Amino acid sequence: MRRTYSEEERVEFWNTVRKGYKDFIIDCLTKLSPELTKLIKGKYRLAMLLLAASFKLNEEGAGIHNRMFKEEESGILQDFEEFKIFDSLDSSLGCGVPKILIT
Image (tube, rainbow, N blue to C red; front, side):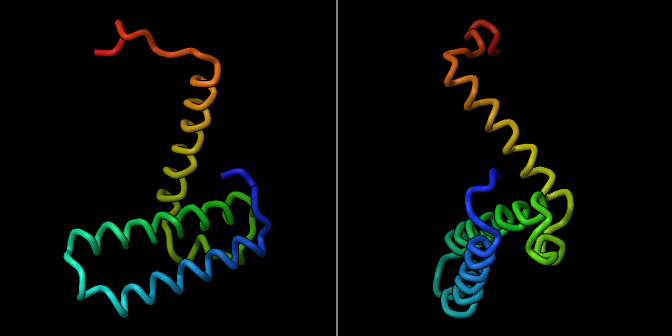
């Protein structure tokens, strides 16, 4: 959740994703299988959660993160991002857990 884009760019991304999600709900919800619908809705929600968490982390976005997601949801995402960084560092250093320790 590093700051790669400006707040204005992320607000624009937020608006684009929200519009796409709403359009999907209106236009496609009943035309697709429940499994595919669930998958697509999940991807939209994840994109919105990533953006909302970035607003919260940077104290931006005029409360976007408060309106749609619970505190626990953005907390889990922050924890995941921290572990992803550690995993990336571990891979780049050529370190790893010896196979003998994996049960």
